Image 1 (cartoon, rainbow, N blue to C red):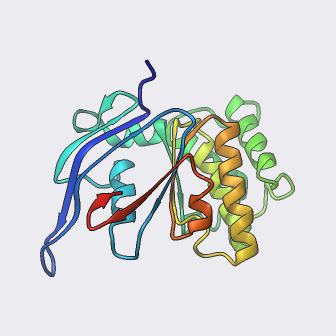
Image 2: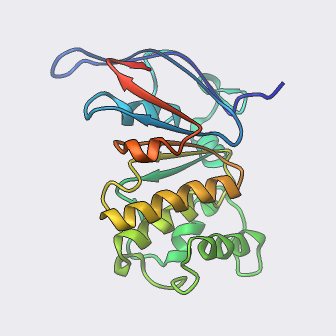
Amino acid sequence: MTVPILSAHKLKKTFLNPMAVEVLKEVSLDLYPGQFVAIRGRSGEGKSTLLHILGTLEKPDDGTLFISGIDTKHTNTSILRNEKIGFVFQTFNLLEDYTVLENVLMPARIARKSTSSTSATYDRAIELLTLVGLQERLFFPAKILSGGEKQRVAIARALINDPELLLADEPSGNLDHTNSQIIQNLLIDCARKQGKTLVIVTHDEELSQLADHSFILKEGQLL
């Protein structure tokens, strides 16, 4: 029997300021290897909050979350994120004064892997940047890249530690329509080629139709 990459059970989250708002009401979700799942919903419904909880960036008020069979309540979530989860954010979150290659290698350095020019990690970074079409930009500082190029770097960076789970929060939200389509297709293609479980939070109904499973977050529940 296949074990879920992610198993969430009855997650709850309430924000108390400036007033009590129950954002998540007993949300349960199982994600399996190779799945692409889309989560849609109106602004303010808590999509990003849910994604942050699934990625252990925030803690739920109640409920359980297992990543690769590991109970997130009883482990170092910083190490777990670095080893098991890759993030792609709407705002890229690159180190602007570092090169493209340095940005991609940063999670590996945090994991204390060798990133020398003779290392397997260095080779993987170049392989990933080639996969996203940036092999000619390796030594460009991130700050001179276009928005679409920055998001490609973010995808390669998310994959560098070979995570099992890839989480993307409106990954094309800051891009024009043409670049949005390119990034969406690239993210899905990279995840499938690398055998990752992919979760994308999006407003885009067309994108959600490409997913293996599509959910709508409404009034704190996944429908």
